[in-house]
Amino acid sequence: MPHASNFLLGRLVPATLARLGPHLSVVELAAGEVLAEPHQHIRRVYFPHSGIISSIVELSDGSTIETGMVGHDGVFGASQALDDKVSLNLVTVQIPGKASAIGPDRLRVLANELPDFKALLIKYEQFFLSQVQQTAACNAVHDIEARTCKWLARMHDLAGPDLLLTQEFFARMMGVRRTSVTTVAGALQGAGLISYSRGRLHIHDIEQIRKRACECDDAVRANFQRMFADVEADTRIQRCV
Ligand SMILES: [Zn+2]
Image (cartoon, rainbow, N blue to C red; front, side):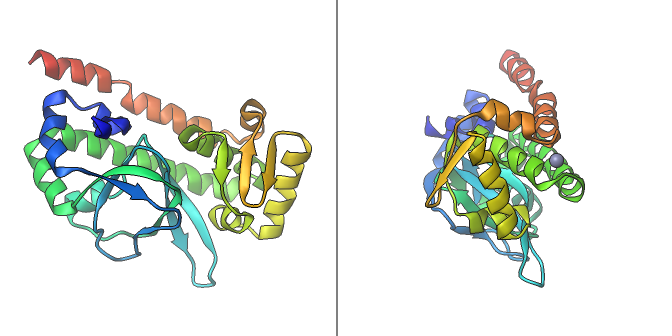
């Protein structure tokens, strides 16, 4: 079933996924597509199979910074749908891909009928909040090269070594001036770790990128593994009931 390409949907017991299946549709995530506007109700909840969704804070001076990333290991919009809340941030597609999508009202009804599904959504939102908190600390303390390498490592995990992105976009995500991105990208390219040309970035040496990254990516990944390590156990328990 294509929906199981998403980590969270793939971890559901077959009976639960079968209940959800008729209500999910597979949609394209187009590069730059706006999935939610600040202080607006969301139109859909997305469980990506591929690509990357970014949550972005916009400041009054026009500057922006990314506060969270969602890929095939997560969901965007579930907490807003469960509580009928608005999106606090601008949410856009950073790297195109595919996702299973569902309307927020339908998701809320199904989550109330399927406690194991609701528990998984709430657990993911707890993880996402921890990612946002780690990002806040990272943006305040760590230098641009270490943050850039952390960001590239996370992108590599979610989308592979070939990334379509402009330096302008890169700078907007990192919350820095474009000249700073150019300097860091030039240093990484000079060291043979990446190549960058006309909006295409290729990561040649992910191990070295990880070594230059701050500890924040490792911290986020370790947190994810800790939080979801019991998912398999939960699944086995439910299958036995
Ligand atoms: Zn950091």
